[in-house]
Image (cartoon, rainbow, N blue to C red; front, side, top):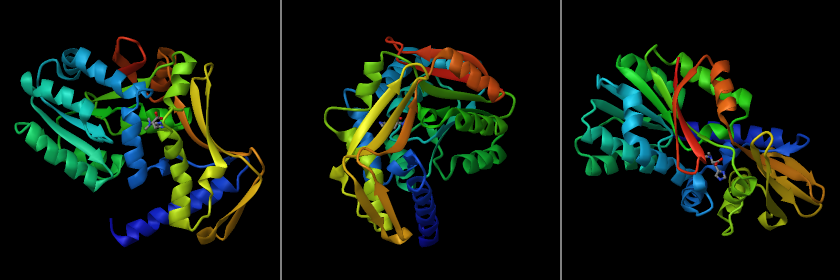
Length: 322
Ligand code: AVI
């Protein structure tokens, strides 16, 4: 990243931090959890015994790989598999290996904003699957989708895993799905993971692990404000708090101030006052059922054609068409 891009990012961060911490009630966006430290913490979260989402989606791939691929391209005419936010590709590799075994003509395009993530994944795939056609793409999702529309006229399957959509409120989720819809040609498909409603304790435990990794992940936004915006948050003066509403299916994360305190954020020339037990809302992780996903699809001009679940029915991957 060049220094101009870095400045723009710091400005956006500063502007949104200012907005969120001067609002009532206070909030900060969960997109700010992710820097080098936050990325590592999220990797650790995915390995936690309590964070069932990763294993559930992995199980779905293991159990249904053959049917998933049939739902993408029954006649093996060939397609571009485009993954938004590719990460380390652990789950996708199950599918890629099946694609090669069954000789599907595919180009895999992992997309990520991080050059490091893409370079790492592409090198790793070249070693593990030398016969796989891989074209890593660095950039914002929609900018890359737009670019891909012009370089390929094959069918596209757009894959978004990890229930990442759950970090968006419904109106923003619809906006996101509508944008994907707009980038699709009539035959193209979306394959997307949605974490499902389940025993509320199971959800709470996933976002409140015993080892405190999720707490550190949540507090990383304060650590970033200290580092990047000259803040003096005392991380020990806040607790990580998780709630889950089984009616709406929304898990919400907060940071709660354990005392009355004032925090200075030098770069924003801002003093933020906290009453004892005042909260900052930092993240939502939405849990779904079929009705809700159907409603989201309808609102976005999409239709569900198939879905796949794990043995515990914790999680579902849906196939959408236009
Ligand atoms: C990336 N996202 C889907 C994760 C989730 O489950 O909401 C982020 C996360 N937050 C706390 N733990 C994991």
